[in-house]
Length: 167
Image (cartoon, rainbow, N blue to C red; front, side):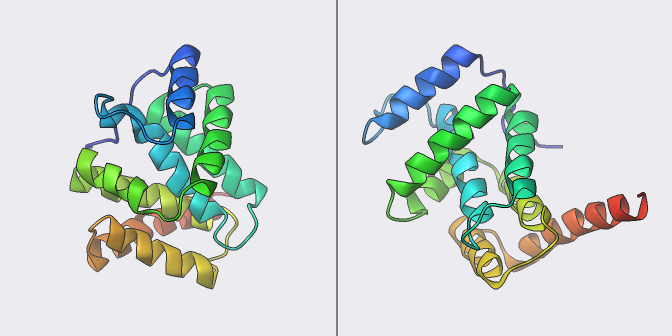
């Protein structure tokens, strides 16, 4: 499976990443891949807050995704979530974030990111109309076809349904 870049981000590196993003614009010499964890976190938190509130299950799903995808500790994932919220509120739109994903990730990696987005959507068991609108907008910004979006959705729904049946 072609995973989103999975690396060890020691606490010092997360803090360095945070300092970089507190500046208005990262320098051209910074590697785009180094900004990927924050970018993915922004997209996941944007989805979590699409319906104007972040359910505890949604926030936990974002934390779990960041830990799993980027090998972060729980505290580093929380720090990244807090930074992502500040970063998103300082931005006018999602294009800056989706552009970095488009420049850095393969189609399979973008599909995997979209699966994480769907996991956030279904973390609270409800697909809200705002979430539905935003997920289609994200797919378009990430240059994902509608079939790829639905494939990611069905994969997540199958896993959710499997977990519900196992209870």
